[in-house]
Amino acid sequence: MQIERIPALSDNYIFLLHDPHRNIAAVVDPAEAYPVLQHLETLGAELVAIFNTHHHSDHVGGNTQLIQHYPNLTVYGGVEDRGRIPGQKVFLKQGDQVQFGDQVGHILFVPGHTKAHIAYYFPPQNANEFGELFCGDTLFAGGCGRLFEGTPQQMVTSLTQFRNLPDMTRVWCAHEYTLNNLKFALTVDADNLELHNRFQDVKLARSQNQPTIPSNMGLEKRTNPFLRWDIPSLQTAVKSHDPIQTFARLRGMKDQF
Image (cartoon, rainbow, N blue to C red; front, side):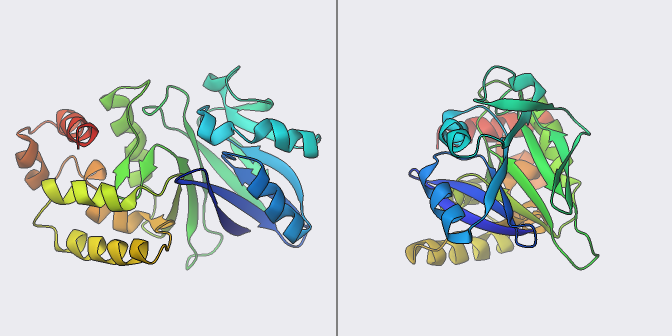
């Protein structure tokens, strides 16, 4: 499975999965159709699936037009998003699986950003390979999504599922927010040397208009404050020793940052 990162709108990423042996493709969260159609034409591949993580328009905006071009494709999304995702045919819940070529993706129910959010996790096929996590807006590089429809408790439970994944899991999140996320992270985790080094690397990359996605889960566990609610220094920074309250205060501070 080859993965292509397609920039869209102002800061979105669409991910195109390509099976070159079968010459088929799937797309994750198509914010718009045109760049996807361009890539498909270049590849000469047939689009067979849309994997939506949630219903927001910058994740499903291209669905209808893509269906018009490929009427036999299948649109996947969370069962709780019924009626909110254009063209949805498959309604997924925790523990379900999806097939793309030879790859099997596992469905994680990760509410918080929305009430229905899901993620797609493709485990590595060999011990020295990366797993692939398509996490929509639940987890960002250096950050996490706003709580529009969920609670801090739900989001911590959701992020815990990600935190339990192997360090060698690539994180394909849907927005290029990394630089601003790390600026905030430094305000609450200032003694984290690896975070400082990451910030410098990201600042250089963005100054050269290079993407920072994918990240990887090991790096996120060590430098993303929204996966570190049980770290004493972060709890001290927000004046709480309760993990859920620590996360909630971090998210509130980020909302105002």
